[in-house]
Every structure is written in C-alpha cells, then in structure tokens.
Image (cartoon, rainbow, N blue to C red; front, side):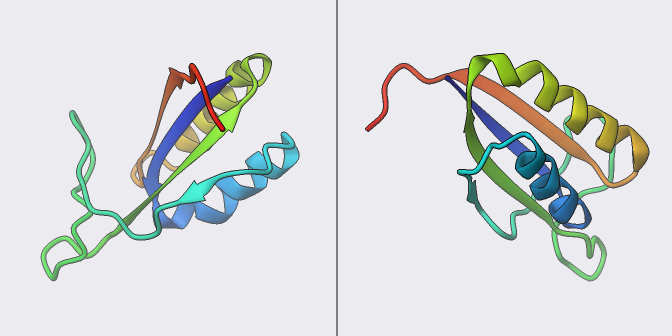
Length: 97
C-alpha cells in the first residue's frame, strides 16, 4: 500500500474527487484550505490581496497496483490546466491500524 499526498489549486478539487471515485479509492483525508507555492514555477497560493488563490491538499491510501494509473490521471489533469498547479507525492506505508 502507498500513501499519495496531493496538493492542488482549489479549482481542481471536484475533478480529483472524481478521479479517486472512478478508481475506487474511497478513503481520503482532505486538508481543506492550505497555503503554499511551487518549488519551480507557478503563482503562490496565499489567500491574500496580492496572491488571492488558495490551495487544498488531501492524502489517500492506494493499493500498489493502482499508483501508476492514479498518477497518470492526475498528471493529465495538471497538464489540462497548467496555470492552476497540482503535485502528487507517493511513499510506502509500512503499517497501519
């Protein structure tokens, strides 16, 4: 099992939930409104007068065999609206309860 942390512009939220639903990735935890900026490109998401955009984030646990498909679908979404911003990070889950 893998954990996938997804950080994204709020405008992507419904599309990301739809991707998870279509892949039968039912469980996730959404962090709602978060602030940040990309490491190389993209506008900051601070929710201020100067930088009004905001981001969201979520984490989901995904079976190993679904990771590549999920990342591919998220990448396609990111490429469809490159100015919004979307990043996904994957790491191993060693144990859970």
